[in-house]
Image (cartoon, rainbow, N blue to C red; front, top):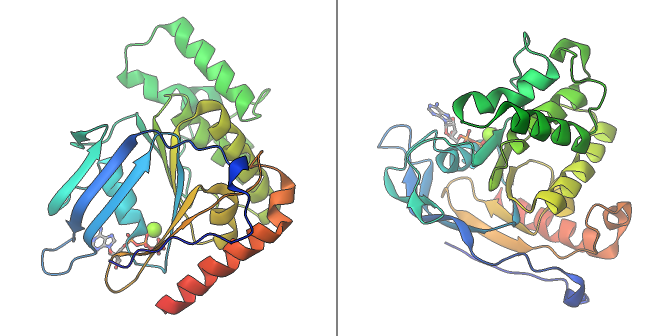
Length: 271
Ligand SMILES: Nc1ncnc2c1ncn2[C@@H]1O[C@H](COP(=O)(O)OP(=O)(O)OP(=O)(O)O)[C@@H](O)[C@H]1O
Ligand SMILES: [Mg+2]
């Protein structure tokens, strides 16, 4: 595995809040293939710290979603271990919330019912559910739409419901697979900023799979670049931008452009 850490030299690292305290996700020498002769992921080592925002970027088919699915517990490794809080992941759990590219909302349920869906599998009092749903609706800016159905909402709003549905369960890590790929660029930028605000408030970790270098740089504490043919981590970049991270100014800062250039160059080396 080639491993590299790069920092633009002129960064003032003292302004960056260090969220890393302890590891919440730990992948150790993980290999996976849909059939045993063709490995998709080979000997991957990856740690995610509590509260850390990590993005995975890499060419189509390199195994990004596969890694996310292994952490979510939808798939099991052929060898190596995937651990959550020190325990081997045995299956999906609401403490590892998942948001997909297509929001997969239930069309026959209202916004409120969609958001509260996860509580069907938990013993939480009705009043607590109501309180948490109301709170999250406010946080993602869906007030007034609680009783609407998904087909009454725009694509961006549906994606907010999907994010809210995961966040309401107070996951320790949010796993997002190209969550904003299907929305227009203005909505996408708005959702990115909201996600950063929510991340700030909830302090949960996030693992984001994306094809957008700009999105990865704007959102992440760390970017992992995957290589196509060796199914391994190729580069790792720590991203340190001004606080608050959701500030528009970060999108046009010199540091942003430097990181963007580095990640772009790393990705081009892979082709
Ligand atoms: N259910 C499946 N059965 C067999 N092969 C699969 C399955 N899902 C994915 N693959 C294969 O595994 C490899 C990695 O797929 P994965 O979905 O993880 O890629 P990705 O990096 O997320 O790609 P993209 O950027 O296009 O979403 C691909 O070659 C894909 O064809
Ligand atoms: Mg994918």
